[in-house]
Amino acid sequence: MAEYLVHTADERGHVSEHVEHAASVSELRERFAQQGLLVTAVKPRGLLGQAGPARQKKVRLETFVIFNQQFLTLIRAGLPILQGLDLLSRRQKNRYLRTIIENVRQRVRTGELLSEAFRNAAPGAVSKVYTTTLLAGEKSGNLEEVLGRFIAFQRIALAFRKKLVASLVYPALLITMVTLMFTFLLSYVVPQFQTLYSQIGNGSLPPMTIFVLSVGDFAKHWIWLFLLLLVVGSFLLWRWSKTEGGSTAIDRFRLSLPIAGGIWLKYQVAIFSRTMATLLSGGLPLVQALETAGDSIESKLLSNAILDSVQKVREGRPLSRSLEETKVFPDLAYEMVEVGESTGALPAMLTSVAEFLEEDVQTALSAALSLIEPVILIVMGIVVATVLISLYLPIFQLGAQAAG
Image (cartoon, rainbow, N blue to C red; front, side):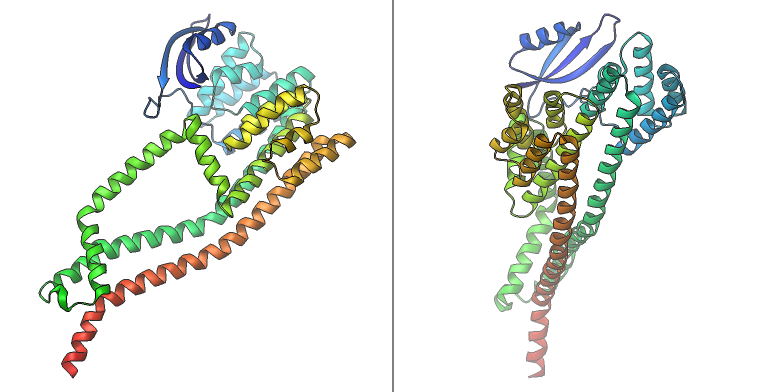
């Protein structure tokens, strides 16, 4: 399926942009026509296609959680939704979020449901889990409780993400320092010694010194080309990762890594399990919760496996068996889901799965980083020692000859 940048207009003249996947342009036009939208322009998006503003940037999670907490407080205090949105939009310091809230407020004023207003006003800016959660709360008439569950879910996800980021800070600093030191040695220190040894001649220099000087000479003349190729390659890789085939290939590579692949899989399954538990607790049907949770995770392979199991669940097959047949989920996940289905406590069991996997991810990541950090230090020491020894070795040899 191809990716398209679509410009649409509704009956009130509101213009919006979307990034959609479809087999053809006619399929896209028919899809939006069923939603009562007029398609004004369609542009294909390729590997180097226009990035554009269509894929709105995500609202910062921490800011969005604070907004929802304030919104929930106003609702519990008995304030109407429209008045609460008006108050929060005027007090919101984040310009991007304030624009979204004002757009939502206008849509609610014209009669749209709150969930529809967020979905139409900020496509891609807020998660599908959020709009689906609001819809479940509106249908059940229990918006306060459902919104409270969503806030609790996001707080746990935010705290877990902060722990992961904090544990990766020190290794990232080490790798950065090693890269900068190695670049400095090759691009500045080694050329200085090369000027010093130019009068001696390569024939009288040790092979190790000749090799290091050759690498330094290459770095001195080609470092900018290398950096340019690195930037261009990174950009092309980023654009490729936005395509269907690219994101799937990158995710398959991540999952195939010896240690990091297992950690990545457990982390994604934990997010899926907690999302499912939140949606089911909010009163959402199993199939709709499964589709929404499958769209909420980053792993393309896992997401496709979940969406493939939706049809099996529609046919009446147990969720645990459908997930087991994907051959992607860890054994623990579908075994605990099976227990939850048999006991009628699926949301609670999914929460237990998420808690167990999150703890497992934290433990495995801490263990991996405790091994990586000394390895980085050892590699840094070996590289620096090798370069310095190779550069000073001719001086030591000349000193020994002079003393003799």
